[in-house]
Length: 120
Image (tube, rainbow, N blue to C red; front, side, top):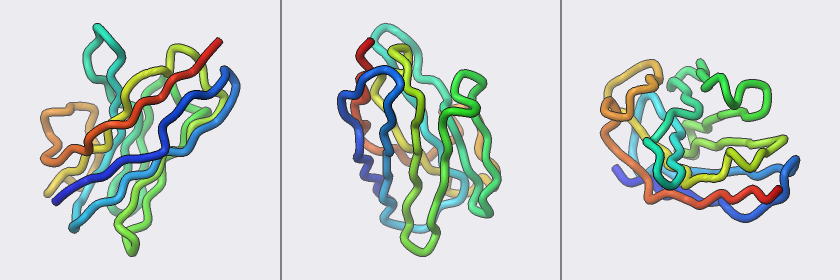
């Protein structure tokens, strides 16, 4: 299974970006993580194969995760972006978990990451 993330870029605070991740095979729970320089990788949002979603408190109400199982894609719509959202964003997939988890160690496959930079 391979994951290919895209959609990052530079945006002003308050703006929006949409990240997409194309998956080459069948997966179960999927998630987006992010990692800023000098910080640990942190959970952003996750979605089960049936569509149940989970969000980090820091992005609730601003970000929305979705997936299209027929097209093997998962997306992250990011609105009202803040400078502290700047990071490399990674999509991740589990080969057997039904529900997303905040633990990055529970995901089997990772995309290459896409840079998101929010200017103030």
